[in-house]
Length: 143
Image (cartoon, rainbow, N blue to C red):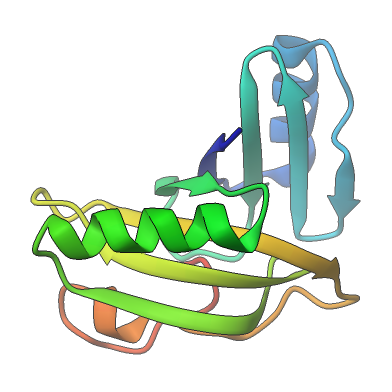
């Protein structure tokens, strides 16, 4: 079963952690100096925040696949939607190693579909250049 993903760029990480912890009734599953993530079952969501983006607000949306086959199914559906996608295998981003697909919806909202393979000790540095509106290089999971 897939999990909905939302990544929000925040200006004050500690204040945002307090707010979202109260809202969700749970502490983050991952808490780093520049990033926090809640893996909630109700609602089933992977909700992440970071202070690494220049612009605050919703950075991107996504679907987290449970396995590689589920991710490839999402990739096939994106191809049928006639949108440009960027595949990344073994990407290091948000303290995780993942296989993923990036795309933009018709409004220009970035969508990340991914399957997490492992944890990594650093935030990461992969990019989503081909899926970006202006094809400018952007930091991992950042506009």
